[in-house]
Amino acid sequence: MKVYEGIEDFVKKNNAVVTSGTFDGVHVGHQKILNSLINIAEKSGGETVLITYWPHPRLVLDPAADSIKLLTTFEEKARVLEGFGLDHLIKIPFTKEFSRTSSSDFIKNILVDGIGTRTLVIGYDHKFGHNREGSFDALKANAGNYGFNVHEISRQDVKNVGVSSSKIRKSLSNVDIHISNQFLGWEYCLNGTVVRGDQLGRKIGFPTANIKISSALKLIPAGGSYAVRIVHGGKLYQGMLNIGTRPTVNGTGQTIEVNIFDFDKQIYGDDIRIKMVRLIRKENKFESLESLKEQLVLDRELAKKMLS
Image 1 (cartoon, rainbow, N blue to C red):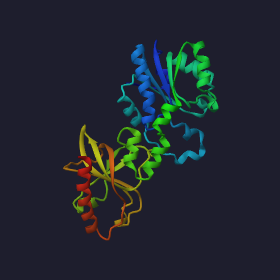
Image 2: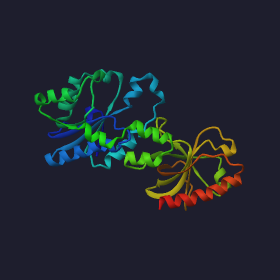
Image 3: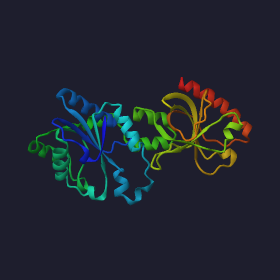
Image 4: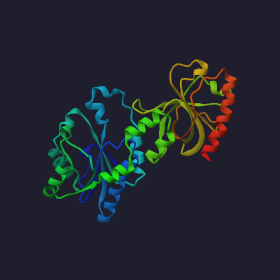
């Protein structure tokens, strides 16, 4: 999959099969659209093109949206999309100026002149252009004039999936990681860099890697202990992750710490990816470090069972 930083970098195609949207999370609802996109391209001998926007439009258009957290950064979204075998991903910078683009200009300048769209695949409720004035009906009306077909994912198809990015955000806030993963169709990931902590875990026999998440916009699931898989240096490991304030030692700020099973390497400064699998327990305050250590022994055994 080739990634383009704006429509200007893209070379117009003869038979582009196109869809567009924010695709935050690339969840199973989005995957209905992707599968249709790929099937149409295979049958017609076309190339798949996905248009997405960064930053998220709500962060630009809604002054009160500072609190919105995203399921995927652009890099994470691109990684998931690449796994579907798409040919082209166009990242359009979303600005207030771009938001004023009319639906007719979007069709002509981007879909037709910029990409060479032959088939456009959209969800039943897809809107585009200034004030979301464009719709399936508007696309259908213009399709003949511009020489492309419009394929709509029906309301019934989307309703049968019953998934939205908002539902996933809510389930992550309620520590329902297994539900979130079902909605996503993949294991929710945290990507970041290993930084130095106070090495308390090492003192009680459970050394942890402290993670600094790569983006402040990333949604961090609710506090608790989780069974996880860890990707480091191209290898996959098992472990358990703790998210929280460490109340047993009167912690204040949130920390993200992962104990990697059967691992004893110095990895400060390294990039790491954590795939969240199941909740072990919600965050608790223990009477002593010894009580915490006893619980961590139980947590590790449960995590290994979950990951097996």
